[in-house]
Image (cartoon, rainbow, N blue to C red; front, side):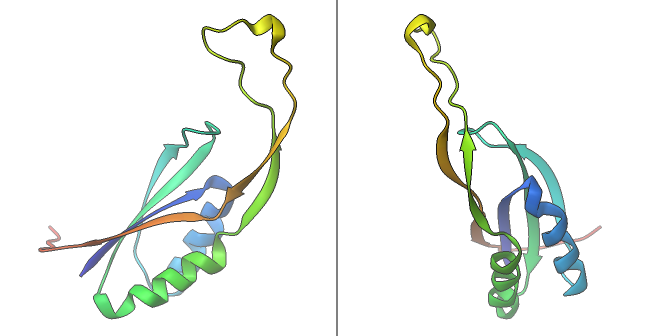
Length: 109
């Protein structure tokens, strides 16, 4: 058995959640916050049998698309903000960061 931890952008969360339910996967959703852009994320915890891991990963890949987004940089902390000129920067957001962990034992009470 595997534990899949998938961190996805909030914009992709509802689409992924619906796709997981449709495919028969049970998941726990946790609200989380990204460090770089300080934006909202959702972390999915999904227990799955070894033979279903590839199916699950395909569902995540199909429903969590990466895209380019313009963001205004955060002013430097502790630095001189007088010379700081915030020019928008284009960064890639979205997609999913997925961890696949082996599970020694699983119990449901």
